[in-house]
Image (tube, rainbow, N blue to C red; front, side):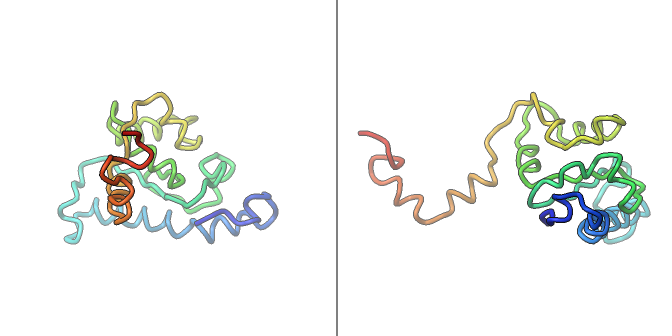
Length: 157
């Protein structure tokens, strides 16, 4: 999802747009968490004794969506839920100096920080290259041709 003009302008239709665009995701996360906790056969391999934190990933940032002014407009959940953009998720999965789960749980437990954009919780951490993106990039057939006999394109001999 991408925010519509109504959300970007924060006009009178913003609440309906937010519910329409993200409401089902909140409900789905809560429903799935309940199925895991109940020991449902389809989720038997998912440990039910671990904390659950839902992520709703959007194509672009939904500014202030995690803020206290917005959250009451969306479905209530029994587990913490964070809305983040794909760029925040891509940044999060490259953290090397702390377990991502711990970062999410600490953020969720903090009444103030849990209302900020996810990127705030990612600041100050050490990051590696994203292996998934690197593998995808390297899968393009023209990548090898671009390297040529002398190495990567643009490299002097």
